[in-house]
Length: 196
Ligand SMILES: Nc1nc2c(ncn2[C@@H]2O[C@H](COP(=O)(O)OP(=O)(O)OP(=O)(O)O)[C@@H](O)[C@H]2O)c(=O)[nH]1
Ligand SMILES: [Mg+2]
Image 1 (cartoon, rainbow, N blue to C red):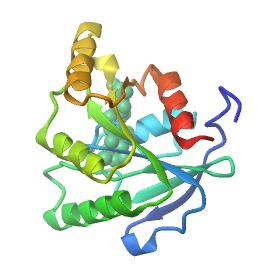
Image 2: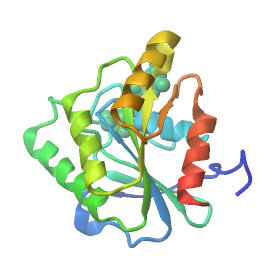
Image 3: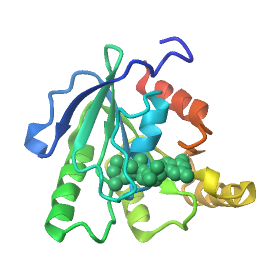
Image 4: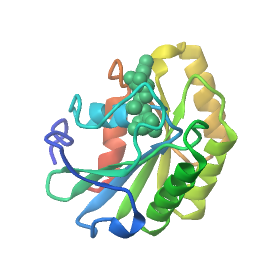
């Protein structure tokens, strides 16, 4: 794929609510995961240069299924339900955890996961657990500090250093889906990891 045109012309393929209904692997997949409301769907829209392809909402718990988007002939971006939103009924949280952890642990064509962290907050226990889970699955993953338009450059630098020291060897990116900041680096990483 040519630089700059790589992630255009994305199209929605499918939403899956049950592990047993995942589509057969058709190409390489790159997934986006993180706390509810952290900005997964917004970041994906930005990366795919599609304004409203992925549903975004102010209300946490918006994404309730595993959603597949195809780019070109063999790359799929996968939007996952978030974790950690207390107001989501318990039975739904359990369902989503099963769905997401099952997907992450078993998907053989999953090449990389971007784990998103809200740059306005400290690392939470659930984020730490999510990172440990990705590591235990031996998945290739990196971290993205989101919504950096809401914080100062010095706080961003502080958070990046903290994460780089804590998770040595894991790349740490930043993004503002609002302003479009950080997209080129994330796109480069995505293309490199998916080898498209
Ligand atoms: N200021 C700012 N707001 C953002 C940014 N990214 C997302 N938001 C806002 O944060 C809210 C949640 O965004 P989503 O993209 O739906 O978050 P999500 O992680 O997909 O949420 P769930 O699907 O509920 O897990 C929306 O109101 C977005 O407009 C950003 O970079 N900057
Ligand atoms: Mg979402």
